[in-house]
Amino acid sequence: MSSRTSAEAPSSPWPVLSVSGRPVARYGFSPTSDPRMSPRPFLHPVTTLAGTPVTEYRPADHRHHVGVSVAVPDVEGHNFWGGRTFVRGQGPTELDNHGIQRHEGFVTCGPEGFVEELVWRAGERDLLRERRTVSVAALSPDAWALDLTFRLINPSPAAVTFGSPATNGRPGAAYGGFFWRAPKARSAPEVFTSTSTGEAAAHGRCAEWLALAGEDWTLVFAGGTAETLRDPWFVRAAEYPGVGSSLAASRRLALAPGASLVRRVVTVVADGRLRPDEARSLVTGAVHG
Image 1 (cartoon, rainbow, N blue to C red):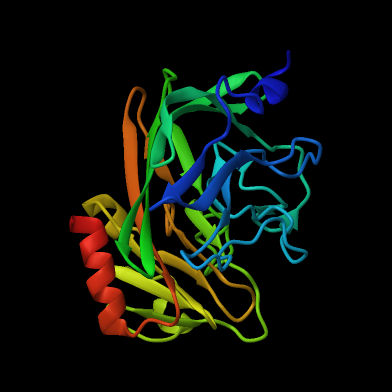
Image 2: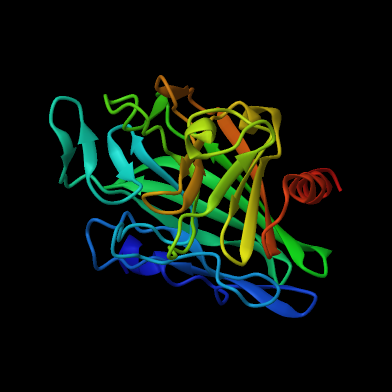
């Protein structure tokens, strides 16, 4: 059995996460038939407690966006994001350099969350091992929290480096790490953070938390560790709605042999459009509660 086939067949079913008995998120695996996908596990659909979808899967504008996932466009030159690779001096380029996040198994798995073991593989080389922890919890009658932590470990005898289009010559494109693709609507969602308002003010900057507010939903993202809080936010609203972290914002990030990095992002999923004070209260409770 090939690594791509086995990656799609966990020993137990892909989990459906529930809050107060209501399904709010389904975990799955992106297709391997498209060589440009950089196959990986993802959460979709994710909904509010009222059932409003807050993720989008393989939209026409970016076919490699798959709900909520962990994705990095450059790990030792291998693309674990999907789509084209930004090459210095050439721009976005179609390359045969896509890796796969291979599912190895669930350590624990239930309706309130799971712990998963993965391998980030490029060709026959295992570049990284990962332990991913995901849990859900109720916050209020109209809001719940998704808590996602990933630990990446370098199993090789040499350093592994992470890059982004920004480190490869494209300013403002430092995406890579946690990424949430939200649904596109008639109007762009509102963006505000703990200290600013608007996409331009939030993009590429650090903030304790960041909110994306659509017509009838609000997502509030917060870093749950000191290291995560030092990663600038990658924000899109006008072009398409999406929020992510930036592991390699201005320079390549090196992971020494045997070393690991950990990032935790907690996301409040709420019905309706939250005010900044409401967003702050909910996300503070979600991170520290």
